[in-house]
Every structure is written in structure tokens, then in C-alpha cells.
Length: 291
Image (tube, rainbow, N blue to C red):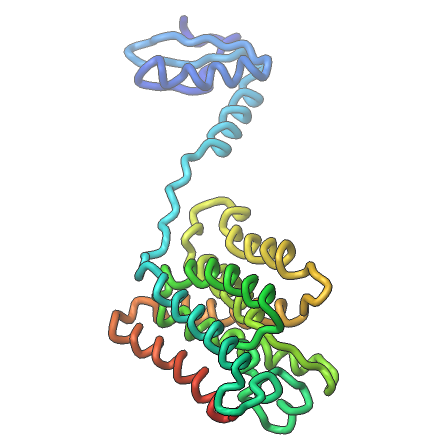
């Protein structure tokens, strides 16, 4: 069919099948259309009065159906399991040492977070409090959540760097918690570090741009996920320290931004061993000062 004053070309193609989808789109919108072949070129035609409307519908369809490239997921550095094993070993060892009164120490009094003591210079409490727990239920919960989030961070940061960042995030989170609490406030538990791991992973995934080619909702998905985890797991329970969970996540988020910018996670196995021993040394030195 030749183009005339009543039927105008809205789209052309080398093959008929290239125009079939557009024809269905127009038909779904109530726009009458036809396909014809002229001089070896397939043409999609609409009535003259529907030309602008037809072009707009096809353009909208193409914008909404642009194929998105698959996101490039972060490099997996290691399994993450040995970092989790070290974490569990430390917190359970401290639990048993406290129960046995090892070295004749009052482990809880020496290591718990006490705002007045920290403000007077006992900064080791910012670290030691992360390894103490009130009872069996407390340590089991932190073992489970810490293992899950620590495993995720360990796989993409490397276990050494991940757990150094988690310890530093928990320490910074405790420091921020001290700034907003009254002098008599006291707390213990690894949950501040656990939520530091949540913020760490969320910030790293977002800032590294693994979803940069996607729509804005997907680009910010790691941040939304971290906030959702905080809302779902970090705000319930009678004895839940919501402020500590929030400060831990904020601290982890800031550290995650730094790691994404510096790409320390790609430093190699020797650096990972250094980071791991630095994390162990930080906890060990804090308890030596506490004792």
C-alpha cells in the first residue's frame, strides 16, 4: 500500500517481524495500523490523525523496554568462613572466661561499656564490650546474626579486612553511642558490630556502582536492604539497644564508603593476613588494658 494523505509511515524495518510488536502496541492503544512492503522496505502505517499519538506510544514502549545490562557483582575474595569461625571463637571464649573467672578478673565489670568510665579515659571498653554477652540467649542471637552478616562481608571484602572493618565499625558505633547517652548508661554485646557489618556491606555495594546501569530504585537497593534489615531485626525486643544498632550501622556505612573508594579489598592475601591479625590485636590489646 503506498503512502498517501490518509496513511502515513510511523516506523520502518528491514523485516516484517521488526514491526509486529509495534503494531500490537498500537492496536492495544486503539490505534488502527497496517504493515506493507514498498521497494524492499517494510513500513508500519497509521492514519494521518494518529501519527503523533502512534509515535508517542512507540517511543514510550521503547523507553520502558530497554534491555538493562546485567549488574557486575563484586569479586568474591574468599569463602568468608574462617573469619566467622574466628568471630565465634572470640565471643564464646570470652563467655567461658567470664564464667570461669579466668585470671581472677571480673570480666564484665572490666569490659562493659560504661559511659562515665569511657569519658574518663577507659577507651578499651569501646572494644571489649563487643565481646561480652548477658546470657546464653544473647550470645546465641549475636552468633547467628554476626555469622550471617560477617559471612557476606567476608566473601567480598576478604575475611581479614571484613572483620577488621567490623571491629572498627562496632568500636566507632559504641563511641557514637557514648556521645548521646547519660553517664550512668552501660551496655554489652556484639550487636553494634553486627549492624556495622550490615552498613558496611550496603554502602560498599552501593558506592562501588554494581547496579549503576539499572533504574534508580535498583541502584539504591543495597541501602534500602540495609535499612530494612535494621528496621526488621534491630528495633524489636525489650532489651534491644536501638541507638547502638543505629550508630553501629552508621559507622559501618562510613567505613564501607571508604573501602569502596580505596578498593582495599583487592590488596591481596598478604594484606588480608595483616588485616586479620590487626583485628585480633585490637581486641587482645583492649582486654589487656582492661585487665
